Image 1 (cartoon, one colour):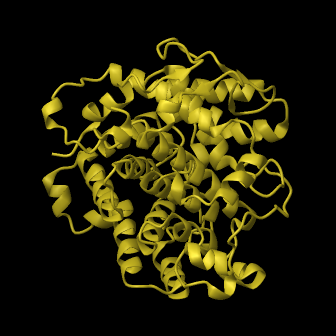
Image 2 (cartoon, helix red, strand yellow; image 1 turned 135 degrees about the horizontal axis):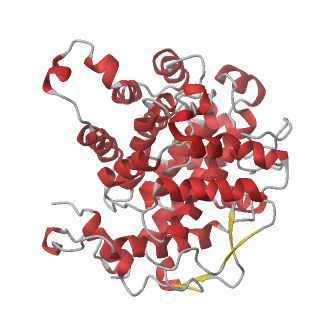
Image 3 (cartoon, helix red, strand yellow; image 1 turned 45 degrees about the vertical axis):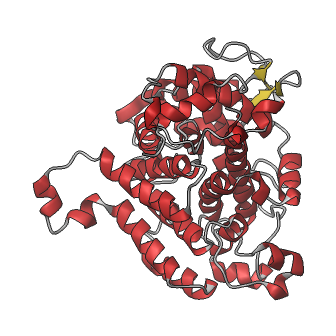
Length: 437
């Protein structure tokens, strides 16, 4: 039997997982963290350090890689967000580097124009991390609302307030507020990978957690976001594969449903009840039969768009998982469509694989979601050093490595509150010395 969250929790509780400078994970907002005036991100202080033993674990490596690869995908797709793939081809051929922004800063895009600057996807993700750490446990909806509201009222510019305004109003007014006009947007799916990271190897728990805290998505988009969190949790398994991730995502969604047998027999069942599953299955089927980027993109454009909005959560989920399948889980190919040797040889040697950034449409969100999954699957060794340096230089705060270390403390508290019995059910996949246990 594979290891569930209750068994995986033992890894977080091991004495090697110590984050110096954080104090007790049970004590609310962890000391060693500070706010930079007017910003909307949690900032680890200089005196915080992550212990070497924690950094040596595969669990830490996969978590850090997920956060970092998600930010890279976001920053790489941002400058060409909303473009058709034909426009990208005409302007760049293939986007395989981090570009500066030509557009002015925007509430729901970038705040600066330097190459590597992240957008609202990653800013919201970092605030979700703060809510997790402030809780010192699995977060509740109110924890997320409070974190966003605190950031909103501390903001010093209209740019910062504009980014947070819709989220805060949605949290404050609840069902009386039709968030995003009722559109099934990327609101949470683009940022909720931390909910999968704190439920490692337990996609069903990650799914339920995302669904419970989500006041940002509407309609079927709540399931889209929950499925993305489940994908990250599934990818955290040491022996995870692309196929196992897709399988566990679909299984987690089915396990959460409360539907009757008669509804499942209805001839409109898949069309009405399973839009996310249908889109994912369609994307995976197309990806499995195409090795050509142009035919893949054309078919994805035809079959995966749900509405003219373009940033629907269902399409984002399907494109992210479809590109992961087309790339065989390779992080570079998932993001940009280039293997390592192609990237070194130059554009003339590019293969024709798919990539989220060069797909167009809401590609920063596609790449952010896919990067988080591929990073958890492959670890930091798959991330080019140049990409990491550029993104870290453009976004020095928060320090993502320290942020991941702080999150480990919150995960330990969550594990302490879980039932960690039934150890005999665990396999040894998490118990090798590489995990520090």
